[in-house]
Length: 116
Length: 114
Image (cartoon, rainbow over the protein chains, first blue to last red):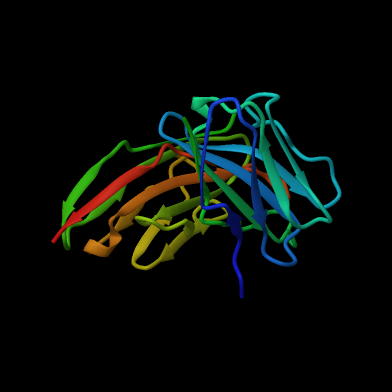
């Protein structure tokens, strides 16, 4: 079966431009997460979506970052007016949540964003 | 808040050496604990997990035991191989939450010499 997929795999952009990163979760997974992996900050949570609930946006670093999830499936992370410190690998993960206590998150390969 | 502290790397060992990567956590209640691994050029993948105190997670010869009394989840392997070279992340998810974010440690880069 297909895993989590992300596109593009690499994105180079100029400072000040907007970028969109896409995530296709595993079919049937109700929860979707975005994380960022950077040299200075390690792996940090950005946002997650769970079913029809309001997303948890507590990890978004600034209002230039936003994300949406359409139809409970595909998600797009948008970064407006990119800055050099936004350069990182952006990881998406999804999980199926049958249990109250535990869920395993499956990660995509990531999108490497470079802001020049 | 909840957090994870793990041994800083890089760690370099010879093949067949014993491995320990230390991990401690801070959390209220009983989080689920994980070790994730990122092999060169590959995505992040779950290596092992433990969801309650005294549980032992194991996979591919690696083991880690959930120690509530010391708030630790150290990763061990008796005999490492070159193919174990990767970055290892200790992590937790918050307790009593059905779909919660993962809080990661800073990662430990492991290199195994033939």
